[in-house]
Figure 1 (cartoon, one colour):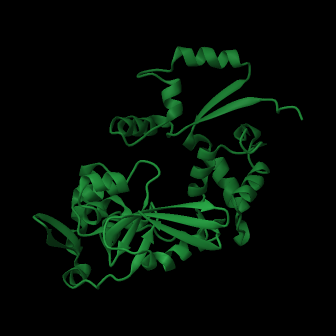
Figure 2: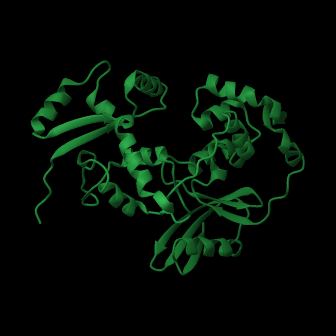
Figure 3: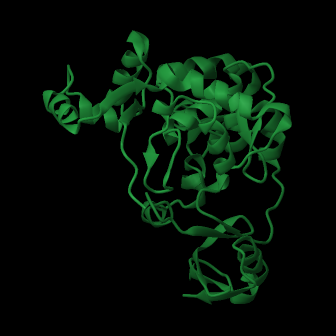
Length: 314
């Protein structure tokens, strides 16, 4: 079978077009909160790179560069139409529906899946704009958006999970500039109570104060996978006070999971498949025995599609 002919190339900037969109990107890029690989390839500090234009001319096919907000509406409308009447579509089925609804220039050839489909970045933004959600089976369904809550509600939800905390913790978690985060925090102050965490001041929801003063006891063994909400950044200094330990537990890639006993960190764990069995290797940091881990190990094996689990403790 002969390879497909490239008819056109469409590049999608991971940034919005227009003066406001480009200004937001420049500021976000300077603050380290926005990245756009295509922007870096095609543009220098002040203008488009001549080397890029020369390369594009040599390709012999039309090269179109668009910002994500310039073509998102078309794909969002197609997504909404595909999910009408309560339909639930997995990723492949959704792509097939989009092939029937969007312009050909928005469907470049994908070498990995050997088909034409909407560029990943573009369709992901479009699903958000269309109000799509993932159900428990990871199928796309049409969401039912209600009234948007007040922005200060983000502070309440953050503290509901990660309080006690400080305004700077909220700013980092939400990806907001500190002045913006502070404004939202100040709006939520009537709902907050000040407490002490060690020697520093912190805040939590006033409604949660009784739980902090008399917390329920944690019990049992838990194997938390990397990325579990309990392991997110606001909790890390409490879970793993030592900086070196945090570096081992929270790595940029390939982090281990956490073994908790009665709410405290007692080990690190990793899993790998070996035939029909899942093998868990555990590095002890505290008191934990192989027998303590068997039930949790079986749960992990079942989730990974294995019929049995084996635990090794180092």
